[in-house]
Image (cartoon, rainbow, N blue to C red; front, side):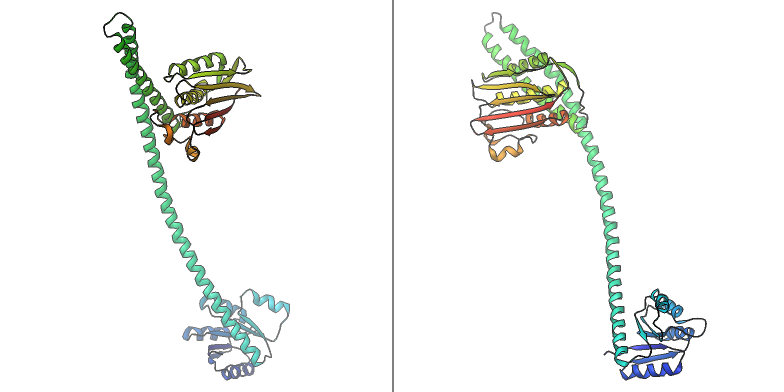
Length: 391
């Protein structure tokens, strides 16, 4: 048993003396004996005590319970109550002061020593726990402050990024629109040159050949700018779904005329249109972007002189489109990247492209609330199927 500095607070001198001898027999140092709460507080002001043995029923203005409340608040020293009573009323009085232990008179020395040891152990563990809790609270406070500052910086960074993205989108849109006008003029001039070359001219064939090159290059560049403009609107959150009634026949004819005009490898498109309604309600521009990109890709990656199959059907408010080619196919290891912007598979070779077509299709279907599936095998071709809700 370790030696402790103990203050005895007991107004019965005989009980105090017996307690003092019992404690000294176990090598404890008695700091003093106080017969009132006031004297006990004075002694604690003068000297440090490890533990206080407190009689509950003290004479004077301060009883044992009140004195203990003051000790808890001012000195934070463990208190062991001494009482000849163990009735429920007494226990209810002392429980609110959180005593370290409670000893019933008369007591034996062994029991007293055990109570004191437990009281000291309890007090130390509570103080250790409180210290750890304080450290944890301090760490939480510091971490919270750090997170707050980090969040402020992140908010600033996100705001800056948003401003940069808005600026980038405006630049892209303005520059792209700026290119559209001169490209239209170049295309018109190339078409005029072809018309002039139809007349008798010594360089008729050469003029027609180069005019066609100019026209094809302009169309390719125009398609690229259209794609850039598309994503410029998408990134600026300016893509809106604008449904309106459209004639399916006219839509399909315009789509096929555009795709066929861009064919350079003599690919044939075979169509199969099921029981399509005369009119549907959807966003014709976004719908057009979807099928034009799918068909153009299918033609582009088909073998020269090959075939592309295009079918459209309508079932229960769903427009179902299927595009099948028998071209180069998509490597299985790269299929997960298929709809990423600027992605081009390693097997495309010298076939020109921007890698934006399928990412445009994916974005269009998100706006149309549609879905797309595909199946592809190397050197056997690719099948895309889209399902788009329409009215």
